[in-house]
Length: 132
Image (cartoon, rainbow, N blue to C red; front, side):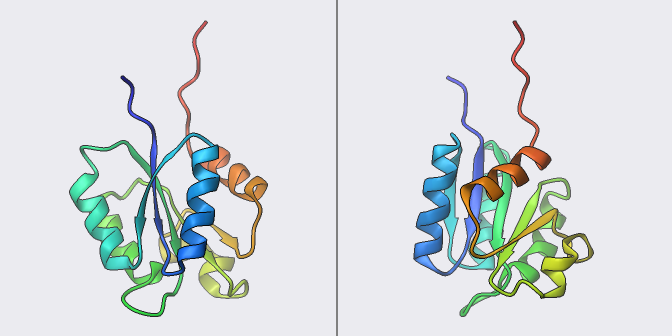
């Protein structure tokens, strides 16, 4: 049986976790959830070889623990190639306006629609082509 592509979601807001989880499952991804940057780093560190983790979506700032801005540096040490997408309600934050300068692959401003997420994932995640 083929393993599903997995995306890690890191956000301290459970409603955002649920929303993203449902969106990603609709797009046929498996999801791992983390409430802070430390947990996201643990997930990528402990599962990067056993699961097919293809990307991470991280909130820029959270209330307790490290947010995406802090965690991205540690994750890049573990896996420098994984696409890491930053999301935030602070649409004018420099990390949202220039994600690559902060170690992120791309950004989305909250709120966003499934179409915005799909376009971003399609742009940065390579799906295996079907051979007929």
